[in-house]
Figure 1 (cartoon, rainbow, N blue to C red):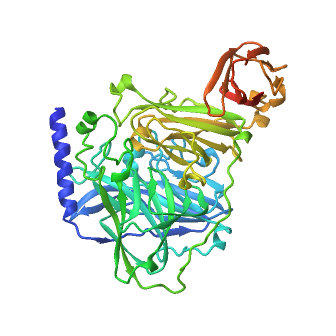
Figure 2: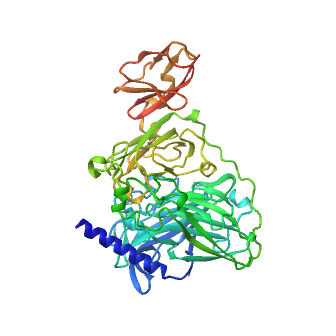
Figure 3: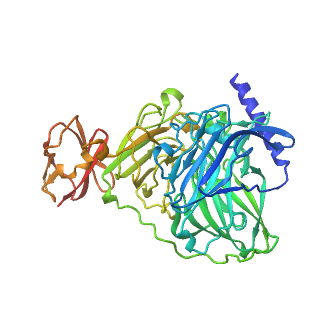
Length: 580
């Protein structure tokens, strides 16, 4: 039976490639826009003919496939009326938005068939590219794959001061990039590595006429699991100007930008450097992706991926075209220059963090039976997602450092809801320019450790959680996800460890051979965990604490700065210790 299934999959893949290769180029479809303060979205069934006259069942927002681009102004108070005309429940997550948990659109904000969900909130995000998509429990991959995705462009007064292309469909273009798999009935296939058909905005083999001037391309990776390594076919440089959360401090001149699932980037290409009628391709240089990233030539255990069809996919490990550009005449009032700087992005200081958390990605070897499997299931901190449980409780205005450690053989794009973050370091090294702006997705490669810093502001709720998860859709659906509550300690009368820095004293500090820690009158409701880290994040000392007063012998420790973490009820406080 398994051999027959593999044969049928392979036959379907070969069939799809054969039909795909017979296509000519198609004009890139560019979604219409919705603007204002009230946005009406209808989730609906549809059909689309990707292969000749053969109908493929699809989903769409206000149409058969994908959705309109939402144009929103910073500080506007908006209402989004989402009506579910499907015969099954769905959700709509505003990916990257800083909103209250009730408006976030995670798996707890279900829209039943026939129902309308109408979140209302103030747009607090700065100018950037976002997207919206389903986020239902176990239903994300199939609903996105069938067409439920759309772009959001937020504008603000600061971004408006720069000379940038921002005329939609003229010099500012949305590019929703997806790879798809079809079966022999022309239906979308999921949970497969046979996604050999490339689409941009739902268009196969697309071309776009671009004016001979500076053009802005807004890239969204809305694929199920594929990472792209974008570049131009002539290896010319372009300027990366924005990441997930908006503009960088300055344009970054490069010839490559890597985007994993859920990530966004804005790039400026100066087509004035080309001649009229010249054709250039946006490519993915997948042959240059490191091992372990889905889309590279090798991921996980070869024997397992062979069975799953990974190595028979012509896109994996190969350079391929994504979109053809045809250079045409300049428009009126063209943008011909590129700004040199933007408003500086100033990351939070690590010294301001009052909570540190560790997140370990690991395979469920008991269930899957294979360490090298790349389809999951996978765990975060040895737990799978449960709708009825809360993984983390944090507090309003906490500044936290999250450390992500990947102990699997596949790269995982980690996404957090509610807030955005600054990457502190990757394997102890400063992040590259692409990751020096605000982010809400970060790709964690096998055996890598990434730390980021963030602050939980504005919104707190004692019952409705936010999500954090792997944005590989199959992994997310299988439970590689957790939930967190942001609590307001003043509203609920909580006196927690991390809000009582004055209840903890460490002396002498600076110290030499012996350190005394006094928790004073702090109420210890259960055993506390204490960990001491050096400046490189290495654990030097750990212990369980059962009393308010104790000593640590530091005689054999190297001189330097240490961080002492004391945790109670999953809430931590941190103190600096200096040894002379």
